[in-house]
Length: 120
Image 1 (cartoon, rainbow, N blue to C red):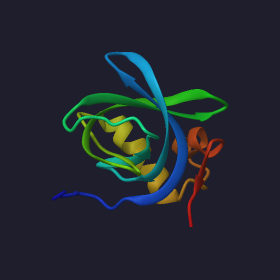
Image 2: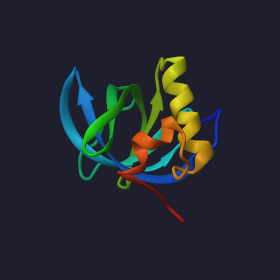
Image 3: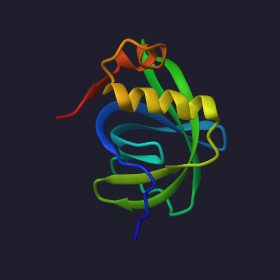
């Protein structure tokens, strides 16, 4: 059973997964919260408690930020990832993206606006 400390919002954007500092897979985020995200991973399965990084590529292909994550669960739909030791600045950016619905004009949302869209 998962115990989330924050609500996840349905938001869709492309990201890149890293393992041991090397890019290993492209994924699609389906929902995002301050505590983590759910991504479509195709047929690849990440092991529970496996450490990865997600790079959110949303501004003309340039990385907005790279965040450490831990795989929490995996299903045929994708993987649930929990953020691990993110900085206060990274948390502030996430909070800005989530509160604006990715359509606001704050500095934090400008980076993600080009490559993301809210999912109804």
